[in-house]
Image 1: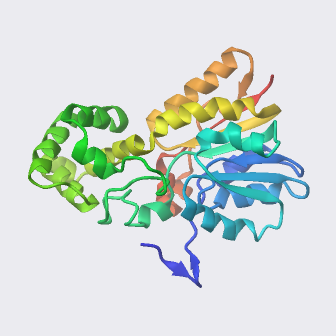
Image 2: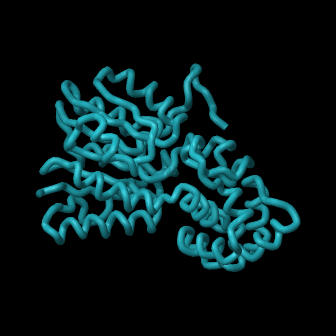
Length: 305
């Protein structure tokens, strides 16, 4: 559920904002792409840094997020454009704008607190709602409910194991396959309850809820997140000017591994200089103020050729 303050959406707090700005070294006149603009927290700060004369391309597949971002960006006053699209179409978008190269591309790979708190989106097991999990609710793709109720048991186990790194993937998948024969699983609450019944008692009351990995796996499967990340990284890097920077914030090991390996590939072929020897992590103070930042990792690479 969204809470409104003075008639506006409660604004999501951007993760690792100071570190992102420090690493990108933005200047007036720069052209920057925020390919995951979300509610516009990073984008607003970026747009402020590149004025006067700068230009921001802000992309997101969530139309509601773009509406929130619009509220933030219009207060800055600098030129920008909002694009409702998946970032896998980055090349197409920049070509349509006659932008051959840019100074920086920023990616924040994850979902926002606004999405998490909206029970109608189905991202959180803490709020009962439909099992949707589509980042773009206008997209004609399978929802989490479609996967849970229609995927073969073996396919479910693979999704839970590969995308959620869930140790008991087969057991979870088997129980889901059994239960859905009696009654389809339509809500986050129903799935959470089922997972809690399967999980060992020690996991039910542990630091990480047993549904966490299952929900992560389903979200990744629904939105094909890893495939999308693999597609956008080379597009983003190729669009950088020499000296341009690509910054990526990831939130789990699967994403971070893809980013790390892509950056290393560019380093070894002599086209990129990795600016973060180790990923930048949030400070204890930031995690205390913004728990969502806990698992965030920032990696940055500079194009040299």
